[in-house]
Length: 339
Image 1 (tube, helix red, strand yellow):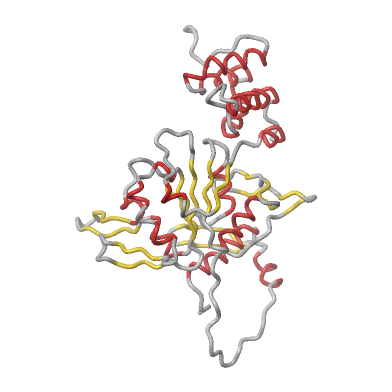
Image 2 (cartoon, helix red, strand yellow):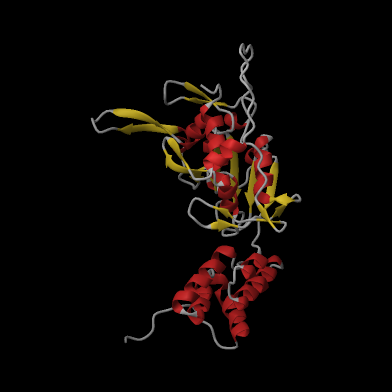
């Protein structure tokens, strides 16, 4: 009825969700419900009378429309992620990071985010793209995991179930390859035709079916350089024109009311890591977990756990730094004597 693809309509609905003017209530198929703000949003939208004899169909949007992040007193407001946690935007090219990623998607420029685990790469992507489909990559990821494979149904027969890549292409959604550099290059090769000018793949396992990407389809990836087995090949790197380093924002950790001593320890270890003196430093994920543990078990237990989660080869150094910061011995969290 609208003359646009399902992906384009879905992007418009996701835009309303980001603005709080609708809510998403289903994923397969995507379903949306009006909120108390939907009517006001419709009334505020300018309309024009329909042309009595349209000769040319309306152009389809090429991607999710660019939206400025909501601001308060000059600062972007936190954005709600699908898991209910809030994401606090950071600066990127003089823009809020979520807005910068949305503009890059609109321009069709693929992005690779790289940095240690726990620095917020996935959180940023989830905040930027409400229509996201995620593939958790590892060494066992197969072509079937991306494109789809035959699965036995209730009657004992087999049916072909499309994978996340095909779903994202058909619905014009964003696809995150999390830990993309852990996936075999031979498997990733199945993705490349969808990312170049062809925007099409062939599903050989399903009668050679050709799948063409709908408007809005977009690929973004995450890379953890320090993880064993992570290899950023030239073929993969060349597909991502923008590569963004992501580190922990310790100022944000402090503003989230995380224990100041824990943040200071993390900064110290991060400086040592950069200087090559230690191989590990707590990232934002570990600091958020620290505060949750401190709230439940107490600060002393939280610091003991911080020592315990450090890699074995760095544990003595971490324990020494925590000991100096606390002024008392700190060891890994462990069970004590029987009560």
